[in-house]
Figure 1 (cartoon, rainbow, N blue to C red):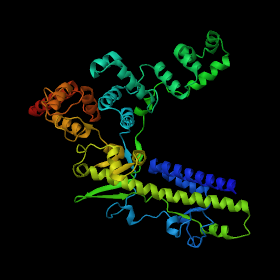
Figure 2 (figure 1 turned 90 degrees about the vertical axis):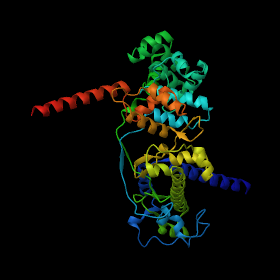
Figure 3 (figure 1 turned 180 degrees about the vertical axis):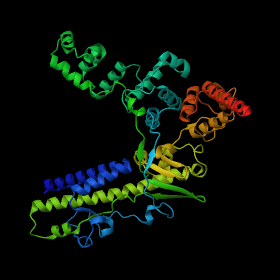
Figure 4 (figure 1 turned 120 degrees about the vertical axis):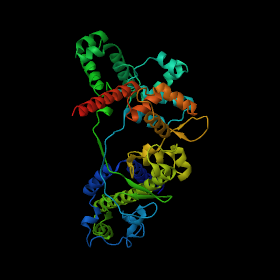
Length: 477
């Protein structure tokens, strides 16, 4: 009996683990992917149905005996994913089934920065890490030497190398290297840590592998040609230019998860789930479980499928509830953005929401991942609303978003004949109490799609000359 009890406990624990894993997975996937998963589940699980095909066979589950289905609840509603007024975090208004195009896909630097900001590092190291990431080129390589970085960033070379080692392991692995060979070596070390031969081939024989000179490599290393071919196959799993796919990405099609409005001083959030099929458990299978004539194998199959359907329905409900709570907490802290738009974001990190909601940071990170909000200012990824606090002598809430807004104001008001250089913008911000590196000024300017000062001056002169010629032409006639 003790062995039987242990087996039951292990089985229950396995079910719990599978359900928890599904719950975590569902929380972090985007709406479009969730739709595909639900359609696949509907196809594969005969017990699971959606309201499009609901008929008299969908009876109340009240009568199902608890011993038939583990964790059975007392009412059908708990087996159903149906959201009406509860889909609005506060108030209610018309739902919209929206499909949007986000034309500016995430850049490599943004992707790396979002991971870096999850790390627990001292302020000076985090600042330096961000500077290193923004220094990377589009392929993910570092175009400057350690010595040059040391001059610009300060600090000793060992600290810079330590931070580069962190970048090497972020996704995509291999960024922060100086060359293709260096990047491949880093990737091999990460994905195949015990493969010394692969490391040696990358270090000393990569050009030969690229020319398919396997015999020559085999002879030099005193190994078989097949062994060399095996390593060449492993090399095809690595990426010579780890950041390349980011800047060739096509416009990103997304389905916003929520719609958010500011009504007076109240944040109103609507879950955009009209696309989501309303799921039910087919009561005919519940009836079959109660019939004694059903053989044990069939009973076990139905039992497992009913439990799987129940877990899916509950996990979707939990996903949407968590998403609404996290979204409301974010937007409640970013009311000024909702009112005035980009440039008015307040500093916000996951730890702030942890104190608001009592959720672990990892749960918040999953809820934020791949989610989009429809606002009056456009569609924004949830991650957009998390901005770093910039050190200020006034000790106020200065964010990167606020600094970009200020930079835009300065450039809009600059002399067209003598535009502000990045260095001059840096000096103005420093005078206003904002501490920031010159390289960051250039990065923010690029994010604002504003060209460098010498190009702005040239564009102004071209426009001025064009206007002058146009006036002369009109005067002739």
